[in-house]
Length: 125
Ligand code: SF4
Ligand code: SF4
Image 1 (cartoon, rainbow, N blue to C red):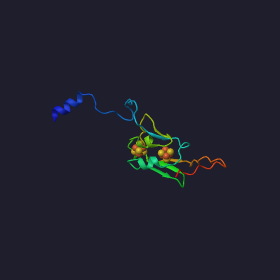
Image 2: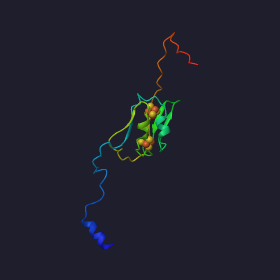
Image 3: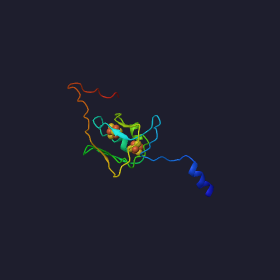
């Protein structure tokens, strides 16, 4: 054990003094999640696909929530997002001293009304 201790005194540190010293990010790193709530239609695809079950979509209250402390940065939610409004930054979330939830108030987008007198044709029999 003594040789290991002595060796460690002279070797370069294997760890960093995070968050003072941060590592340069890899290209295409999957970092902190962000949402453009104006584009979201609260379809819940992201919530159903999330393996960590940290996204909650409430269509009655029209809210979208995520617990970033449960997120494992897998990127599945942004891959399945039907409106391409859920994405990831190329950096990780900053350390926090208190837990919080991402909370967004959205709205369900209405489909455009069909023009009067233009009924869709009956299905072919
Ligand atoms: S990145 Fe993965 S774990 Fe995080 S919210 Fe999206 S699907 Fe869930
Ligand atoms: S973020 Fe995308 S997948 Fe999730 S509810 Fe909104 S539109 Fe649907």
